[in-house]
Length: 38
Image (cartoon, rainbow, N blue to C red; front, side, top):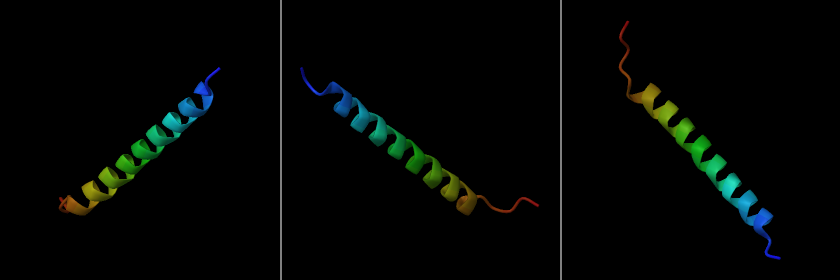
């Protein structure tokens, strides 16, 4: 029996980390690059 659960957990952790990093980066970048419209 291969440890598939461990691999799946690692995949999930990597995906979550990448997603959160992308969200934070895009959020900060958007706020920084956006000029004040008001």
